[in-house]
Length: 200
Image 1 (cartoon, rainbow, N blue to C red):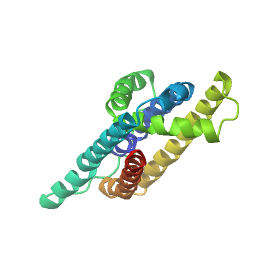
Image 2: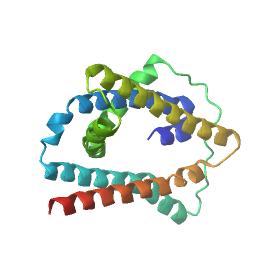
Image 3: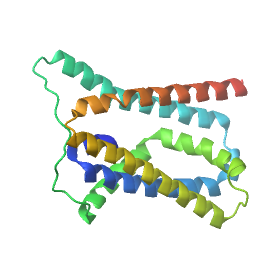
Image 4: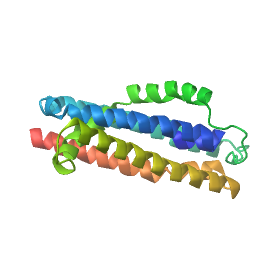
């Protein structure tokens, strides 16, 4: 979503989403780390159902954002690849952030994969990466994760911006992301299968 906005509308459209998603990651990480004890008590089948729902959601995103446009562009003989937005007057401001709060909030709520991810990873983080289980260490880890996420997203957006200046067509850049989505799908499918086998 972030990269698509950057490709279609410019750097600051994508970066504003990156800022908000990093804040959301901080909140989710803090919330799930604090609730790890309760998470362990959740029925394992509920976790599996959420993971399957996340797989379906991710498959939908891949089909909607990549596969269907690719098929449509091949069928449409008059289709010409559009360039990435390189020169934009838009800068980061409060209105853009407020507008994208709705976008990021809706995405987090409607994306079951996010919930499934944090249900699984929060227990692992508590066991492997945090030695002192208190609010301060949970907050510091969540802050570190949020900043790390923002830095990685910023680097990705800079790559898009550089590609735009180099004249790279946006369709090419979008389809370069397909292997990453496929690897993620395979990983989650493997994880779900492994969890089901452990229960049965």
